[in-house]
Length: 539
Image (tube, rainbow, N blue to C red):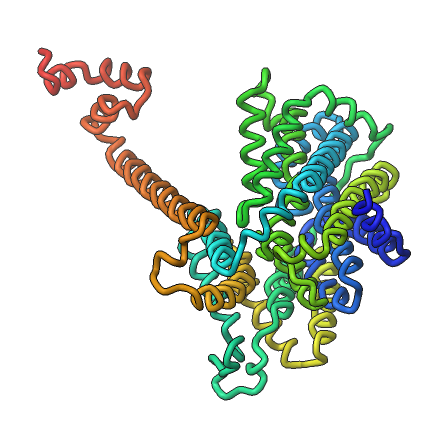
């Protein structure tokens, strides 16, 4: 009880309350504008949070992170355009509801599902907090190094089909982190006698370039679209009643979101896919999925909103971000000399609980705001792309320059902005670069500290947690290698089938291998009965 009271005392300040309101409302607005997204907003606001208290800055960023998915459901449902990337699955069933004249029902169901997922996630974290406080001290330098390595590997293998380029981009991020003075002997690395590189490349400069400036370039080079929105009639409270009729789908989807959120590199997309697949396979009406199914909408929105709070677990317990947004938040901790990890749970448990309570309040504020202000919010989706791009471009350069009043930082941010623009145009991932920078620095420091007591290679994994993490790394690599082998095998079979499908012998061979359907096989036999009997020796 004393812990909760001390946590409430941290939150009972006017600046924290203002941060809660600004974060929740601002996140909804950002999410409702297609093409911007929380990563861009957090990147722009990041320099401003450095001058705030840790709880204030983190509350603003958490508010944008968590509430943007609420707002992203608005354009996904009404105009079939996801406001944020993770709302893409919402369009599958949300927009078909709008097309058949039920936009109010779809939005209400999306809000209530998001609220349920967010609340369940935060409650789970509050219940897990005592366990985390006991487990966190078991992680020493070697364990944190292995956990960071596992995080990078998970991020790479999560980009299935692009794992090679994701690994190369993560390596590029690790290389960027090494530029400047190394952390032990302070010798220069990769500076090429350039004084501006001696202090290294700032993470915020890279973040603003890769996310904010690149998105500004995308918006500026895209054409404005005329958007027609659907008029809403009636209230928006019916979704809570409909959600109560599907408790199994909602609870399982929230569970997927919590579990996937705690695993670095996995995130909302995997949680949504698993929950949506589960809901479809266990539904009494699976044919409705993709055509306006309420269960499909519940699964998608519940899962993606259960992830943000769960993603704070590896960040707070080990100091290891699972994706780009939590990597940005990690920099706020470091600026204020608040080091996430085992010591944070031992020495600042009230601060941790205050963050959890803030997340609970944020979810409540967002739902209240949406139920009251959805109708005027619909107009936000009509903002022209080029105007948005110009605003993002201006704010990004202001944010970069405010870091150190350096024009050099602006030039470097522009360079990374062009790199990010090229990667987006090629549909290549950006997140591995940021996580490579963040986790690469952690791995270097922890590896040097851990190797001081290592005499033989096996000594590095001679403790239980280290051994478990090492085995997890091996298992992930083996499973990924197996998936790659199976994908290549199926690709070769598909290419061979495409090459030989038109031949008579090939059609017969496909049937014998089970590649063709029975109906196709009967048609082939009927058309070529004589040749079929001769080839099989049945004449």
